[in-house]
Image 1 (cartoon, rainbow, N blue to C red):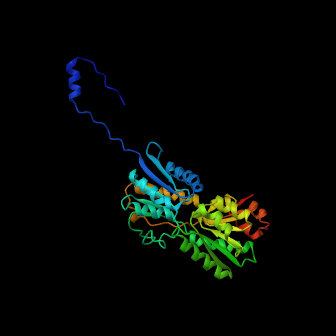
Image 2: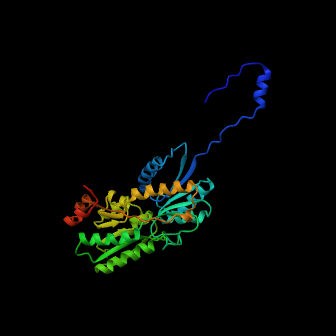
Image 3: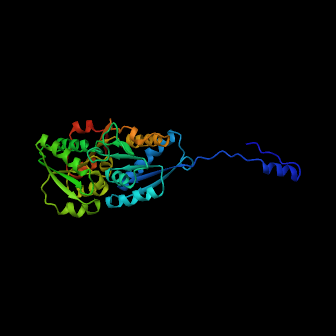
Length: 320
């Protein structure tokens, strides 16, 4: 900007002071709240979310700032963290997994919410996918359906599979559709589903260890976390799967889920539209079109299992 030279006496200074000075108003950075469950989800989410915002023209620190809250998988903390974001007066909240989306919805009916959650209609988060209504929209991860596919992949690896444990988080309303899909998939394959309910990942290890060996494999609900269940299942020699990509990367036998990187980028697109004035109620909820099967060969070896060539050929990613 060209600077004006001030030459002259008191009269010209006074004239300058008397003139109104017009300064273009600076738009403050948008404040984006992020509410995450298990810590293992945070870094992958932030990577893809930030990259997409940058591609859309946003610059962190200049046009947006993040307010991040992590419940560390403790569902009972989610309402407190959601309330914090509301008090911070963020412009939009991104909530990953059903407990966080539910907590955000309960905390505010005014701040727009972008959810990444399984079966949001079945859990009552939204009215329907095409017109979600209210202040919440985002991505339905189809995690319940992917849970059923996990049973199919376990059966392919274990032809003698007769009983599969559905390891549910009793504090998460998503446990109902999660269990239902495992039961349906098991019934079609002649595999009995054994429901096991735990109160969050904190009690997972002790509770799982105390269960009698009445199952041959297990499917783990994502809100129970990834690292502890994956490691513990291998130690206990229980072939396990989860509709959560991080589970297989953390040492679990296999995972099947919607492409998480794409869903995280899609969340940034929703935020962009909302910040530009679109109402969440007018944004249809998306579902994943690409699913990823991840198989962990190290876990299979530790469990003494041979991975069928057909499963290796199907896998989108193999952990050596």
